[in-house]
Length: 476
Ligand SMILES: Nc1ncnc2c1ncn2[C@@H]1O[C@H](COP(=O)(O)OP(=O)(O)OP(=O)(O)O)[C@@H](O)[C@H]1O
Ligand SMILES: [Mg+2]
Image (tube, rainbow, N blue to C red; front, side, top):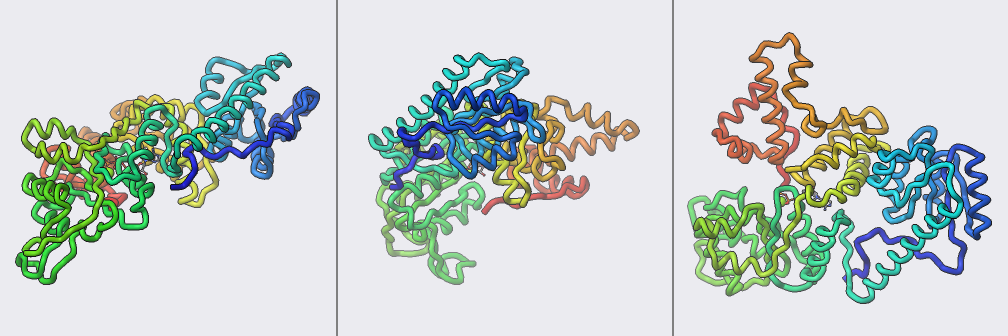
């Protein structure tokens, strides 16, 4: 098990060396007076006249704290702060400004500043705040080391989440991953169920064996059995050769049963048998096969309710529900939004070979205020779209979809098309809601048609007539 933690590891600071502070401010007089003050207090000080030079210094050397001016030439202090947070998640940053409005303070905190100081500053208070932030940082580092020693913690590099509920989830994942227990992951669509299932596998002793996902909802029920258990040649008309099932393929590893709530009742009975006896039979076969497979199942439906309604076997529910991991919806852990935004910006800029983009304060505010019914997946889509569409380095609020900025789409439509006929406006509106729903369903037309309660053929006719471009294929 890797002995690392899921915070970015902070550089180890040797307590015999002087603490190092970098001052990023465009006014030479401010830099000099702050430098003098801090050097007299025994700090080692570097200075930078703008954000770009400050970021370069941070890349080239290790600092214990950044004093960052808000109004800088070129990129603003908030933009620089976002880049610092993306690269050095835990480095203490104190913002300095002449404009200490409540709004600025709130925004600085949103972007992850540790503190906020107004010019002209009080030397004693400034020094106390600096010592406080560095001390706090040291305590955090020590805590991380302590926790590491006391209780093994785990590296979840690709899972973002500092909020209390996500930390609880990650702790539970770390605890249960090494065992063989069956795990049920519950959560709304887009909360990261598959990501957690993969983390469970990669932190288990099975990590070098296959992780096999099966989207039980996407496979027609008659095919699901042969997909899971395999079949022998001639088991049914189209079985022209025998085929291994996913249980056999996953032997020694983990089988991820996604959308388990949609599984047909007779398949549920067979699954229960494998879970109980670890044995199964190929479709059409006579011999039993023994497998060693760990099951992780996921659902976004309420399985208890499905049991009450007779759509899900109670005995299977209890078999699966040995350990349950409940993923909180994004609206209940808003403090993770800035981190997820930074993570997505970095990822999509790299994927599109663009320089790292930042977002304006108003954009961040709108993102934090949104309720995210599609959770992290919806956030990813919004950021990807902004990265691709933005012509500026800083993403403006206007690039966000209308439902995020609180402007009704109808109002925008009418305003943009003053001469359009009613039919044209209705068409555009229809196109908008269908595209939105498709995006929400990960471009799965069947799922979107079901959600709209219209036949798939009707949806497809509309897609064609309204010229809707299917932008992404379903994953897997
Ligand atoms: N905590 C997180 N940190 C980083 N990325 C995340 C996090 N949670 C989810 N994601 C990303 O969001 C997207 C959706 O996650 P995932 O597919 O695991 O969700 P899901 O719960 O299985 O969704 P669905 O119910 O729609 O299948 C993925 O691209 C995933 O990488
Ligand atoms: Mg999923």
